[in-house]
Image (tube, rainbow, N blue to C red):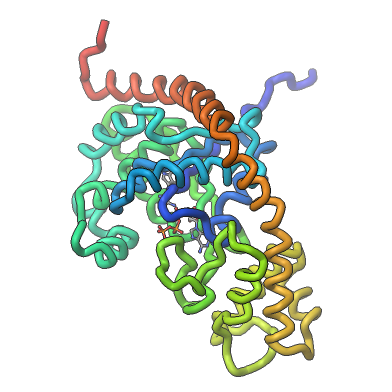
Length: 338
Ligand code: ATP
Ligand code: LTN
């Protein structure tokens, strides 16, 4: 007999902060481009994590504008609000409510071990606020409230997905099965795009050095200039190697932008110098980002449309979130409001 059971798609959830006025090539390659590619195979939920952004001081008007730009960027990267749920974190208050509860099931010691906390608190020594410390708990709530199976993120966020699993496991152990245990989903290539200026460091939105990061809205001439200045080594051979972080990074970027494998990139540039290779990287990245940039510019002229996408996304997300939250409230012993 034919098997008529419809297989349920796995649930994917991810988020990106609207801090910094635009995304980097690292965010694009390591995160949002993959999110778009997952939409047919999975039930996807994507969120602008504006509540996470205020763990570092933000200028209110800029945060508002950056939130719209982040939303426009997800759409321009190919995320389709008819296929996936796209919303702004603060529009679904259930995340913050669940985060409070989960705070009470998360240990001070485990949060103290988070590398991002150590890193961000050393960079913001005058503002080591409690939100920065409990940031992974809100992120756990974002994930667990949708019973997500997979969380597509760059390599730097793996530790945060692991703590979400630990918190879920602890809660499930105390109160019976409540949360699905999520898995990080890290791209095979491009999970950690490095800074062009200091290729031992991750490319990051908050890097003050303008030559370190390609920004997704950069003009072609800026992209070409930044690649031209990219730090490499003195070996002069376009080939990957353990002591060649700059070239390794450029090979990864060029592979992603052209669809070639790293081996094919090495073959293409055999016998050629770094100058030619850097120019080709600049051209390929500018070409990859051009349609994206044009679409973000168009969408930013239509805030009413962005508001509508956000509103509809939040309504769908809130319905799903409410189910898990009420289950959790019941399990911990909160009196239901009748
Ligand atoms: P910040 O510099 O403010 O910490 P960020 O550039 O690291 O910001 P996030 O908002 O923390 O950006 O990250 C959004 C997503 O992009 C995450 O999934 C993260 O793993 C991914 N990501 C960030 N930087 C890179 C990078 N250099 N390479 C690959 N993925 C990245
Ligand atoms: N912490 C993430 C952004 C983020 C996120 C999430 C990612 C907030 N909530 C839930 C995945 C799942 C970051 O800084 N990249």
